[in-house]
Length: 53
Image (cartoon, rainbow, N blue to C red):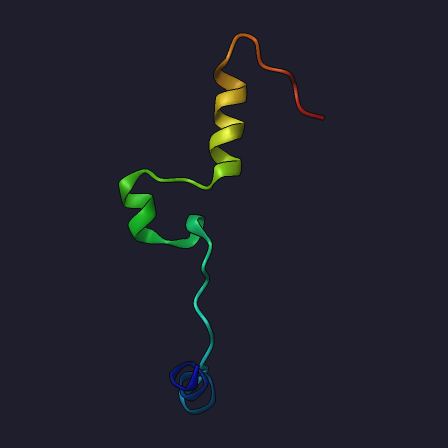
């Protein structure tokens, strides 16, 4: 915790990087998406999909 505090306090424009999967370039390169995005993709591809409102 102390190292995170030092980063935020003493680094110019110190901020926490996003922890979301869709913001990670490494995850994008591997083709890994957020669960919500994967679910949405599967719902649109399935012939038995229920439409979302």
